[in-house]
Image (cartoon, rainbow, N blue to C red; front, side, top):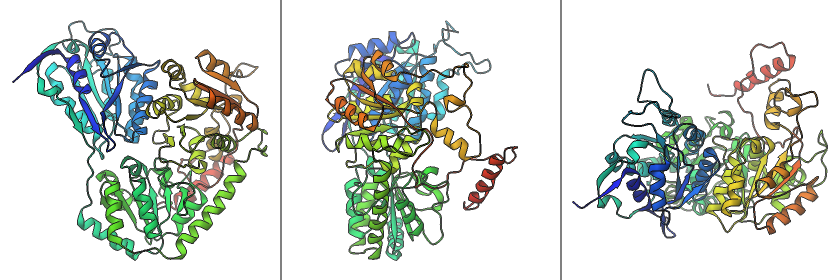
Length: 618
């Protein structure tokens, strides 16, 4: 057998560079590159190896390990899990900074390869700088924090171990059901150790995503349920996008007269103005979608994990007279909520259902009902997104008005990016999605600080589209460093900062559960007598190298967005917004209210909470 002598780090980099993906539109490198922040745990081994292969596997430098991992995850999501990146850091705080991002990728089922440096396998210099000594288990390092938030985890303590570990990691990253983050912790001495690797290990490998087909008996059962229904409804999830099944979903819905509702991850699966589109479903849903779910006699969930925002904490679905069918590639998800499973790739499953149903169609009045409810919701949309001043408690613009302005100033293919706070709910309800790739909201982990870094990753994936990041002042303050990275790398993003002086979303939730406004809005926090300072986000953004301006109202915002579109670098626009108001249309969400409290408002909230709990199945 032919071999080549390489260090473990050199072999790892050469292997990653040899991995390709057939996306259906062509064969591309599986890994766009490696985001890296070097330290003593990875600069000598992996850093040297990446330098040698920088033409085949580019290395990108970021300013924060969590931020670079968010960017890598966003890149993978924008590529519908077919292309991805790796992220490397030193052992210690560099590694633990990425754990939050690993949790985000795990919750959202998104691929990213984490390559943190680790302690010395030989333990000779222990304890080294940044090493956390576990007194009862010396083999433990901070990288063990990745175990619960990784789909695959390994620690390389001998150079030949990557021969078996790397292929398993790649298959995990590409598996349609088990997709998620893979972590390979690299002991820093082993990175530099050499081994005679088989040359065949580095042969170019072209991967293709598997598309499991529906099992005939399951398919027959589901077909019988659909044929017996008169008013079925589809809940489209992220699996529709990852299977590239938006077109098949449209054909299925049109062929059989079935309305489509959308989860956060599924938004954009059907155009907002399609006659069968009812929009967002669940806690952050439209009145149209939630009314249809309540009236349906069958619910077909496609590619969704049915988390609590979608199901309104198990109060929106689950009626005996309306069976729930889960078309899902994953066994874990296909049987949730006592559903009838149809375990299959979304594209394959929808195509099989369309073919087998033939000329079957829902009740004639059902599509008419959809159009009526959707028209009522769109009238509400026009009202809440209008640029005129609202009757808000502060007189400041609402989140809905800002989103209306961004939509008016964006093109159909432009991408909107968001993650946490009240904005994702407003986007889910209100954003009119024209293109399946034009909506990018991380709401599985609802991670503050994802927005700007995520916008960078989306721009790297879609350089031909404008990327609009909408972010609250709270999330901006959490993590803004990758704005400077976007300027440094030449990946322009447009950032709209909504400054409501605090955590407005959680303040509203605090009040809704009977609590007093406390420690959320800056005016309700522990501060100096003069109060918290008014932050100049435009000045801060300019200090990071972006162009920026502060505006006073919606008209000025729209004019500024036009200037932002014509700019050649990242551009930030900031304005003050109202923290107290939000739009209507959603359902109840299970947030536990204290059983005992001296506050009358909490007691009243508890009574309402118990009444809503009674609607849950158990």
